[in-house]
Length: 115
Length: 110
Image 1: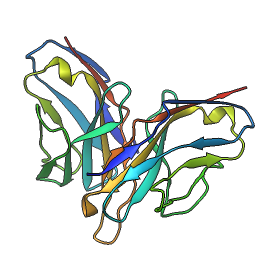
Image 2: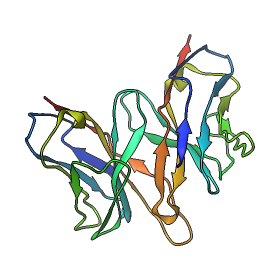
Image 3: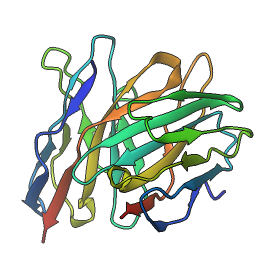
Image 4: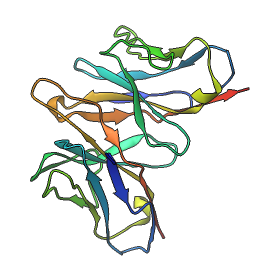
């Protein structure tokens, strides 16, 4: 199992450009998450999904969009990149049932710079 | 609102010394807390959760509801313990969302 994979590893964007950060998991997890981590800060939740076709906002959703058309994939879209979106982005997944939730597994991260 | 505080950005100790990484939380519900670790060039991974009450790699953490703390302890630090440690609080019920502290870099000197 590859676990959670993210592409690209690094990206530099100009202000106003758009891009999609890809996230795929092969563990058949129903829940998926996107976090951002700014220097010296903790991870902050951007969006999450509890299953295919279902997404919801986290703490810091402004400037981002997500979709979840399959169990495996959870892409994050930046429409009009701004310098404030310079950050490291982490995708995570977990398995959850009505009776129990399990740990989140993280991807390796994407380092994004907007100039 | 829920919050997780890790007051130390950096903790430097010598090999064999005891370690305590501090974590305090604020949450109106019944808390569920975790410690995640990120070793150099590796991804973030779960170290331990308070519900399981286990010791992982010699680390333990006890939830103290009176002091709203979940400090991570190890009696004798090893060089391979050097890493970034994050305390996290689960909230949002079945959505399994996490809020993270800002992290503490543990540096174990030889």
